[in-house]
Length: 179
Image (cartoon, rainbow, N blue to C red):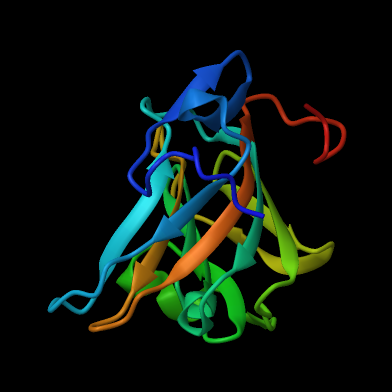
């Protein structure tokens, strides 16, 4: 069940020590994009300050609409991890798109999935439900960058995804489940 008091899709994520939780202390949130005349719209939760590129991000999610599988983004300093069209992979910029190491993965409606991303400078690696995504090396080491989870919806589409947990550690924990 999705709590009714969760923040809106544009809610800011608050910093609490080395852990992030959605604003207002809510343990879950729904990301939703409104239908739009533009090709993409974006709704998400974002850390209000930029972080250095040494961190771990954990997102537990469940797709609520059929179109949400191609549009989840986890932003980290210097790039994005994308879940789209039944695949998961990396995006740094348009020139680096083709070398992003895509892996097939079916994000099924009503099933929960967990993405864990670890960044150490220019090196990033991730798993989805424990299945490794090929590691990726950015073209350079970013000084700081945005940390966010977001959802894109296409023209005249409404994409919805339930985010049960969105956490960030600036020091890599020994376990992705560590608080």
